[in-house]
Image 1 (cartoon, helix red, strand yellow):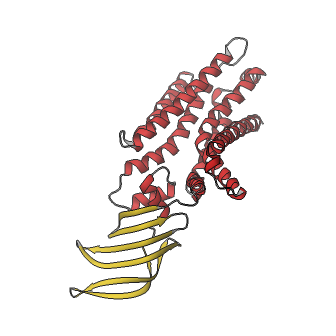
Image 2: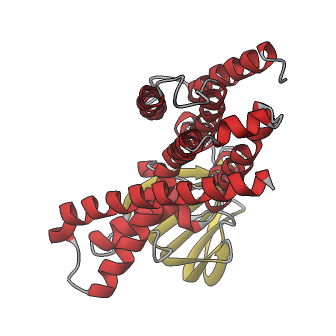
Image 3: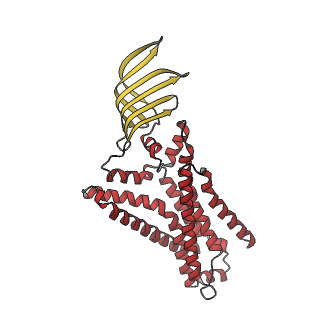
Length: 340
């Protein structure tokens, strides 16, 4: 019974904090970008929806800790923590509902980060710019092919002016010229493309409909240019299929999405293990102010490390250091209290 009682309180406070901060973020963004948005109300609603999803993805880390602090403050105020301890509950047992929900939220958000919804900020940017989320003059290597794209529209999943050079033993064996290509079912479909085959040291020209470049995804191409965001699935495909790519940027994004919430969860455990249990014998207000301050400092540190790692100044694995350090501290405290 205690498990579900604490879980419901924590879930309510987590949703209140996370949704409130996300809506505040969206409101400020909407006011700032109001003049740049299209006048159509349906597009504005869609923009607000995408920005809310994006805001929730970057703010739920804080919601994990702030929702916990709100729940803990309420339980201390109404002597619930003291009552649980007097009934023989250990800190290890009381922390389980908080860990269960926070880890469940982490896995749920991580699952969403493998889908197209992880690009919510780019969809919002496309609406603000009049659906002009495009890239021009892309020159990339994919497997044994060199690809030039004059213009790419990742939202419409179309490429204009695509030239594909197939290389074998450092020699060009085949060239595909396409004025327009469409991405469907993990393949590029070329309509009335021109193909040059090298046979007996002579070029043979043909025109035909083609299916080429399996797993060569438009969203990956868009992010290789900017690399502001990438889903877990696209990151996997990029690392597996693309060559000569700066993996530090891609892995920095992946590590930030994984280790920032994990650091917050580990810090939540630390706060619980060091929290006061009664309002009369401890300065609970000071503890809460201190906890909020250090939470923001930790979140800001992860964000700063992410910015440095994405620019190549630091290696991507530094983003895991705060989580490892806090986890070690948690284990030491648990061992000293004979809870581990």
